Length: 183
Image 1 (cartoon, rainbow, N blue to C red):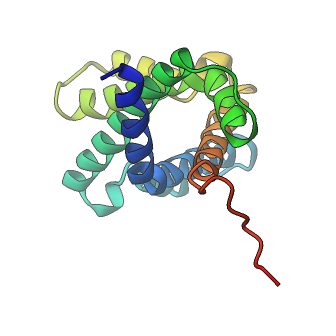
Image 2: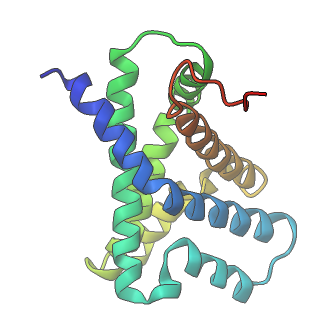
C-alpha cells in the first residue's frame, strides 16, 4: 500500500477529530495576542483566555491531555498533509485552495505545534530552564518578529489554519451533489 493511500485517510480522520480543539486553540490564540497587543487587554483577562487555549479551565490533567492531543494532532496533520502535498499534483476548487494555504503554512504550523508542546511539557514534566521555555514561546507566538509584527504572524497562522479547516470541510461534500434544494 502506498504512503499516499495511508496519508489521505489518516489526514481526513484526524482532521475531523481535531476541528473543535483547533478552532478553540486558534481563536483563543488570536484573541489573546491581538487583545494584548492592540487593545490593552489586562494580564488577568489574558491569562483566562490562555487557560482556554491550553485547556487549563478543565484542570491540569485534562490540560495536559488536551495539549498533547491538539499539538500532536496538528503535527500529524502537518506531516500527513506534507506527504499529500508532495505526492499530489495541482488541484482546483476547495482542494486547490487547501493545497495553496497548506504550502504557505506548513513550516509555521510545524513550528507552532512543536514549540507549543515543548513549552507545555518542557515546563510541566521535564523541568526545562526558564530561558529555554521563553525561547519556545517566542517562536510559538512569533515574538522573534518584534512587537509590531507579532500579532500579524498570529493572525496569519490562525487565519490560515481557519482557512484550512474551512476548505478541508468543503472537500468532505460528496462530489456532483448540488447543495441547493430542488424546487
